[in-house]
Each structure stands twice: as structure tokens, then as C-alpha cells.
Amino acid sequence: MDNNKLFLKVGIFLFDGVEPTDFIGPYDVFTAVDSGHPEKQTTLYQTPHAMYDVFTVSETKKDIHVSAGGLVFKAEYDFSDCPAIDILVVPGGRITEALLSNPNVIDWLQNQSKNAEITFSVCSGALLLAKAGLLKESSATTHHLAFDALLAIDPTITLKKDERFIDSGRIITAAGVTAGYDAAMHIAYKTAGRDAFFKAGEILEYGEAWKSVQRRLSGLPVHRTITDKCIKCGKCMKVCPFGAVVEGENQFMIQPERCVGIGPCAKLCPVAAIESLF
Image 1 (cartoon, rainbow, N blue to C red):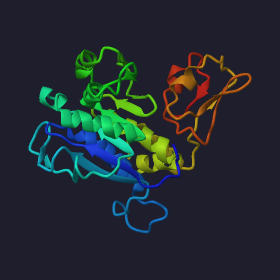
Image 2 (image 1 turned 120 degrees about the vertical axis):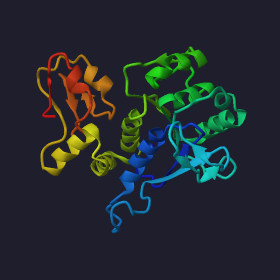
Image 3 (image 1 turned 60 degrees about the horizontal axis):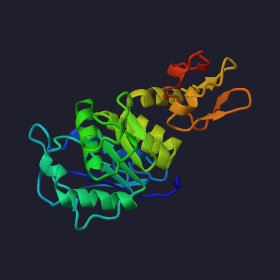
Image 4 (image 1 turned 45 degrees about the vertical axis):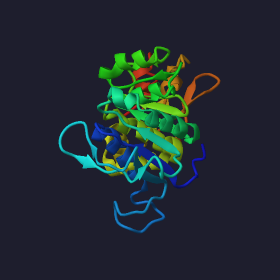
């Protein structure tokens, strides 16, 4: 994927019963990347899109009622007029049988996914991807209350119950609700680079990313290092979501320019060879 490509079009699918955090989380991450972009001189949250063009799409332009409470949304586009989508976001929520059996929705998801660089589900949105046949014989995750429903739709899926998100290349699935933030941060890194990741973490003051940003703002090192205690088991390289771990002749090493300091590598290292001050 071309990390220098600007204006990736992020299309967020909305439907009656959608869980608001499932789509507002990714929306926040992608728009936060653009806030305060160095090429712009406008104030925070007023910056025109510099990396992403984020918009919402629904089957029709009727009001969208969320899964609980009285929030009502209206998508900017419907299936007939939405722009081409580079990153398709499919949130979860109240995934009804009527929605799963709606041929217009399933056909639209299938067609959009063919052309999108990334198709990204959050929470029970994975059920829609499974119904569209997009998760066949692949690893995926979803909200813990939707585990059985996901496998009932497609038993060929390898369900990863203990992962916050699964990146299978063009398909990314996130676990429940707030995991959508984590996966969207990963996608920001993957599509726009390390600085974009830090920008989103800074604006949102989000989770482990914010801890890393605080260190960076304080002039402290962000990346982790691997000491000579490394036994080359390879666990760190397998779990790093940013591809920062590489294999050397005698041990694994961390590339400082790729590491963002928040990965699970240090927790999984069996010999405590990965130094971390986080």
C-alpha cells in the first residue's frame, strides 16, 4: 500500500441498530490524523482532510437510529451515489436477520470489498463480512457475545477469541466496540505511517498510544530494544502489529523508526529480553 497516497476515501456503512462507538471510534481516529496537519495552518479540528476523506453511507438516505438511546444519524451517501471507497468500515450493533438477509446490503459489501484496499469490521460487523463470504477460511475476531453467531454463519473461520484485532491483509476484523479504536490506529499506521499514528494518539489522548506520545513529547525514547538475552524464539516478531521486529544473525532486533512502543512483544518474551519503560 502506498503510504504517500493522500485522500484515502474512508466509507463508513451505517444501518438501523448500529452501535455508535463502533463507527465514531474509527471516524475519530481517521479525522484526528488530519487535525493539525503540518501543511495546514488552521486551528485544531478545523483542518481540511489531509490524509483521509471520511464519509458515511447507508442503503438509503433515511434516518439511522442507533442500537440504544435516541441518537439519530443520516448518512451523507447512499448505495446509488457513494464515491469509490479505499477503506470500508463495517461497524456492528444490532445485526438482525433482516439485515443479514438483505441482498442489497450483502451485494454492496461484496462489490465494495473487491475494490477497497482495506475492508474493516468492528465488533459484530464481522457477521456482515461473514455473510458476504469475505471471511471464508480466514482468521477473524468479533465481540465476545457474537462468537457463536459468527461461526454459525461461516464455520470455516478461525476464530481468535483473545485478540483485539486481526489483520489478514485486505480484511481487518476488530473485537468489541472500543477495539475499533485500536484497529483504526493500526490502519492509520499501515496507510499513513508512524507520524500519523502518533498524531491520532496525541489528539485523542488514546490508551497505550497516548503513553507513547507523552514520552515522545517529553523527549524520551519511544521504541523498545531487545537485549542479548534474546533466544530467537520469534514470538516478538509474530505479535508486532507494526512490523518493527526483524531477525538478525544472533538475535531479533527492533527497528526504532517503526516501533511505536505499545506492542505486546515485551509481555510475551519468555526471557524478558525486551526492555520497556512503559
